[in-house]
Amino acid sequence: MKVPIAQPVMTEKMIEAAANALRTERLTLGESVFKFEEAFAKMCGTKHAISVSSGTAALQLALQANGVKAGDRVVTSAMSFVASSNSYVAFGGLPGFADVSDSDYNLDPEKLKGAIDGKTKAVMPVHLYGQPARMDEINEVAAKHKLLVIEDACQAHGAMYKGKRAGNLAHAGCFSFYPTKNMHVGGDGGMITTNDDNVADLCTRMRHCGRKKGSNYEHDVIGYTYRLNSANAAVGLEQLKMLPEWNDKRRTAAKQYDSMLKGVGDLALPAQPTKDVVPVYHLYTLRTKKRYELKAFLESKGVGVGLNYEIPIHLQPAYKDMFGYKEGMLPISERLCKEVIAIPMFADITSEQINYVVECVKDFYR
Image 1 (cartoon, rainbow, N blue to C red):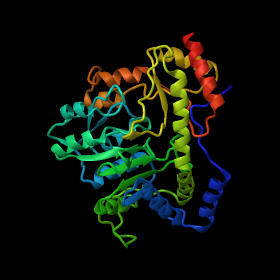
Image 2: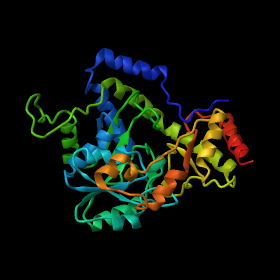
Image 3: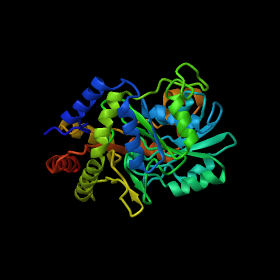
Image 4: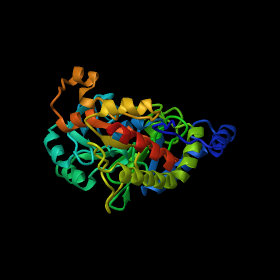
């Protein structure tokens, strides 16, 4: 049996929605874009949602619209995809990193305290693998230092923390619709969520070349070409309708993995859901000191795996060269990046596929 690590959904209904947008709407900023934004804001429980061309663009605009500028430091997690910090380093922001918790792999609020300096302007917690970070504690630390908090919710569409959705837990939230995420738009795309009218207005103008409201050729801010295409938005609107069902299926699959893999070898399983934290399992990860041996074995059996992430951001070549980061600075992140491995997780994964993956894992340990 072959079981892929991910399996993006694209139904005929979604294809037809994209085709209809191409036939009847403006190709950019058409009707589907605004319908998608309205529906996504409703899902998150926020006043505004502003669609953009990628999750990275969402992070960049959310930070800049909230006043982060060149020379300001943003503290985030190094155990994430490099886009998390690229989003602000690209416009001259300074990277800052705090280590993660060994239990949920998210930004550790206690470690965050020691990573804040006089240049720090914002904190960017990452809801890694669809597991919400400890936002109450992070917001408390940030408030004490008068810092902005921008959620990197690019892997957490629909996740819940203390009764609220990811994307509605800070000054702004940012999402990615890359094809492997819990929902996608048939290509690249992103979304900013916020309850701040001024931030929403500025993001809306900045994504559209900085145009002054109501004008085509007058520009009152420096902007970018970060619009979401109408056909992509039409796909996203259809996917969003399926998101609650897909997330439930992921949680069911995670429970099956949990029950069958508990106590196997040296495996550490993902953090468990609680009354306060409802994850959405963008990835289902295992932790083992035999990661590369397990990876080779599973791939030989046709099982897709992912190494998320092999290199923490601060040890990426560009960051070492530009900022002088060295090994040993974030010991938990560095260790986890050598031990975490993702096994197949997608909405339509079957019990038969899960059983096969589990048996392959058990065979490896036998």
